[in-house]
Image (tube, rainbow, N blue to C red):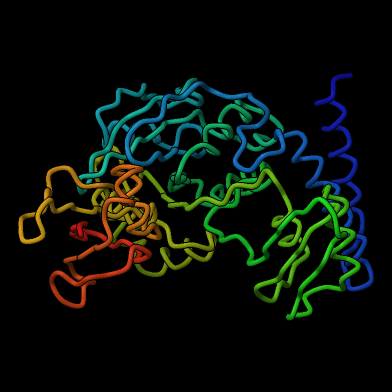
Length: 373
């Protein structure tokens, strides 16, 4: 029996034990230990590093552009049609399952940004256990910046099924990491700093030890209500990703009808606002592009060579919304930071044109910046 087979068998046993053990205040501690053991086994199975591709099992993808987006969903929901509509790709289109057997890339250009879209084979129930190209598909998802979670108008509830498959595979869609700071150390035992009294300290220590932490500090930055979130914070193989949920194959009349009561129902079912589109007819394409742009958190930064000159708007630097001017400098040149001591900005979030700011200022979209002395 291979190491992978042994790990899978151990995972199945613990999953069954969790299912068979009723959850209440008296069993919270036991559930926490079981979930910690389960997460550690999954870390080992997935290669043990954050954002790992699942132990090297996956498609060989050459990433290009400023960001990458994967199309994930059931077979035959129209992913290939959507890719062809948004990009210059030529993904095979058919009305039967598993039309796409590999990964087909395409490039969407929007607001000066190049977004690589990847059309993946359809995910089916059981993908987390490698059913229907499962592990290969999941490895590509982990390496991307955003997921388009897609179904059609006849199978809306499957959004939750696909999301659950990715959850089992260690991918958290549309969630933020819990505010728990983990600092590992070589000695000193495990110190717990929890001003919010989320859990008993001995439970936190036992969960951490089960997940391979011997020494260090666990600091809570907010009230944590579920032990699962502590386990997630300690896991080495989780990936948190933004998601855009899409229901395809609606026409104009359906979209009109669904935009009121039915669309509210769809949002409740999916726990997140979704987009209603028809890839074949081009309905909802502009709204989808704008949503991708917003969820990716990309911004365009224009550079000025001269303080009183014009900014170069043909080739913006594409940055993340939370990045700083210091990081802009590093993108331009590693040595440039030592050559300048001043930054001035223009744009909608500048207090006035040419405002002098610190290098720690976060960038914003269409910021113009001049660096100098």
